[in-house]
Length: 131
Image 1: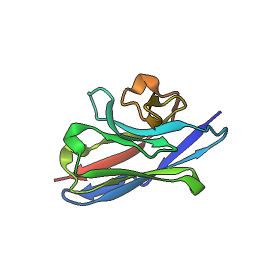
Image 2: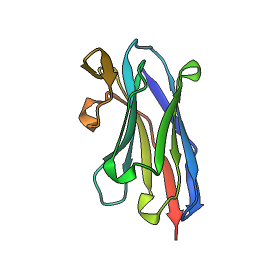
Image 3: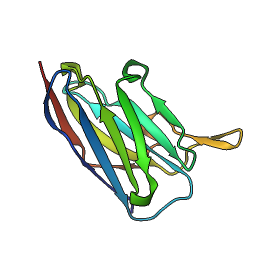
C-alpha cells in the first residue's frame, strides 16, 4: 500500500510563501504521477498541480499558473509544491495523491488532472492565508 505524508502547511500572511512536501513510501512504480489537490470549506476538491514520473511533465490549474510550482526529488520519493504570492482564497486543506497510471502520449507520460484517476491519497495539510 502506497503511503503519502504531507507536511509544510501552516498559517501565512497574504503575499507570503509556503512549500508543501509529500513523501511517498511503499510499493514503487516505474511510471506514475503525483498531484496536489485542495479543498476549501464548503467547496469541492479541486486540482492544483501534478507531475509525472519519469518524464517530469507537469500540469497546473490555469488559475494557479505562475504562482505555484510543482517539483520532485526522485531520490527521496518526494514531491513539492512551492506556493508564492499566496492569497486568502488559497486557504484550504491540501492533499497529495498518487496515480500509478499516467497518460501515455507519443512516447512520454503525462499526469492526470482529475481526482478520479488518483488511487492513493494523503491525509492533507491545512494552509491558511490571512489577509
